[in-house]
Length: 170
Image 1 (tube, helix red, strand yellow):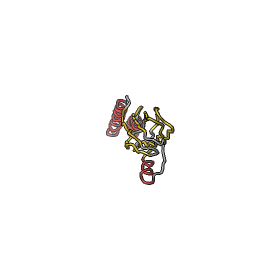
Image 2 (cartoon, one colour):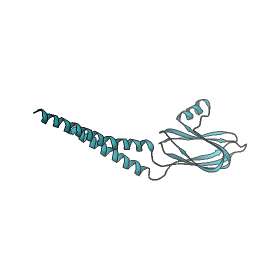
Image 3 (cartoon, helix red, strand yellow):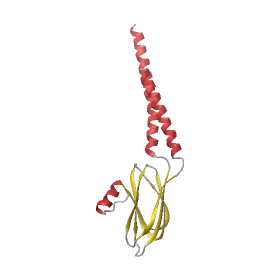
């Protein structure tokens, strides 16, 4: 029975450690990439693919003329690459110079797709940064922090009840 109590305490310590690391790791914004370049008239350009965690993504977009910007997830990237079918999570049209914040809900691959809607080339500059806590790590650490004490307390109650029953039988 003592092993189970120790196991609960170890789970509690792991949960608290993960919580501290998650908070420290996400206490500031993280720049994850910079893209852009010159986009030809009426053409599409898929920017780099990024592995993102569930945080808030901030896109800062600057272009010489208006462009359309799409944020794609893993399945959207595959559709675009294989069939040139557009299936964006978020769409921003007529952008020249703006900053957008979008929530990334699940960990995975994401990319930015630019469409130059003009009939002349345009220079673009896109900066991506992450803000806030990684929600999946936060929930995992909270769950571990709660499960650890529950295991220890339940084990303690069961062992006390068994001990009481052993004393009443004698």
